[in-house]
Length: 154
Image (cartoon, rainbow, N blue to C red):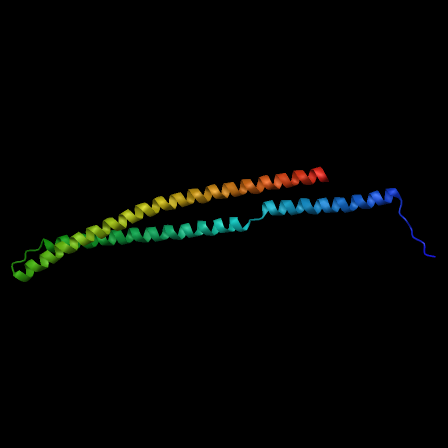
């Protein structure tokens, strides 16, 4: 004959309480870890923010290119002001005039691109900041809801 020892009701209750408290502590810890650790979405937003900085550097370089084009234009104007008294000189002046127009158009295009890029970068920064705020709010709200449920159960 085998004897089976059946624990008393207080021992069973104590054991259930021990397991429940451990589970509640683990659940609470998991919720806090989830709320505090960056998510894939947050890491993606961080990468996007870094790429925006890279775009900003490109815009700065494009502005430098526009300045260089403006210097070329000034030199073309100075070269066209020289006195040319030959058919070849006249052809050269006409070619310079054409290049001046090209330089001005290219400079205007570069400056407009810089302006639009800066506006777009500002918009991107605003969107990223809004998304980061929404993500943090959503994580905090979900964490608070999960914690509330854990508190009710535990």
